[in-house]
Length: 146
Image (cartoon, rainbow, N blue to C red; front, top):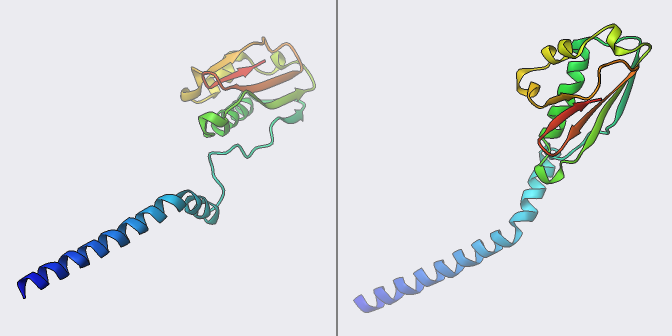
């Protein structure tokens, strides 16, 4: 009687192990598909670039704060993208009626940008033209204003 109970327990234990192995194997095999299905169910992947850059804006003048918002928008949009999907991107082209040096300065724009971005912000212009190009450089997560 004791031998039958012990043998019965061993058989039940083996059946449970086989079922568990099958379930784990199925889960491992199809886990990628289920992850994608769950992500699609709850909305698009925020880490993928879903912006249509470059965008061009034309105004008579731009304030330092407005230019800073374009810079921060570019930086935020592209640093949230997965590293492997990041690439050099021109985000914004700002067109003004007169040269930018007439209504703003590099220092004014730099001070209007948040502190977290200032170290990655580089100006390759003295603002004496009527257009500004704001671009993201993937290497070093830099913003270049030219």
